[in-house]
Image (cartoon, rainbow, N blue to C red):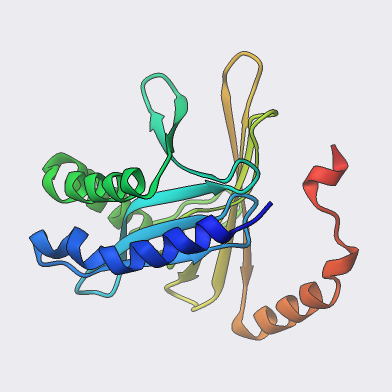
Length: 214
């Protein structure tokens, strides 16, 4: 297993971002997450309010040494993958995703409406209605394709108190093809955050991966 191809493509895409976005007078950005089981490259543009609007995510399968993108059919409740065999396919996929993002007014409206909703109000059964500024999109922390299990996290800041909120979402697909979704929230202050990070970092060697428990 090697990330050489991942690193080469990341460098190439960084050089091509300007040409991908120049038609719309936009500056494209990318973030790289190499710590996930399937490393990813996320592409986004920044708004005037310094918010991020994501338009494409590339995933990398290090075992098969190949890139892919995922799509989800809301009507059929099914996800699919498109494999990208070479650098030209990868650049074309990012290019097409960006153009679709900019040109599809319905999508843009839905995107703005959805995230405006999330910024203004977040309702949780265990807490009163909270106003949360979500600082990150959902980031996949674990995925098991054989068991149809996915665990994601996203981080936000509660407007009223300034506390951090970490939301964990578990998605499990049953044998009847039903999608079960559970959300859990952990709220903490800035003072607590440094302690939590230090405790986890000092005991990482004692923690088992979910893959080892199967």
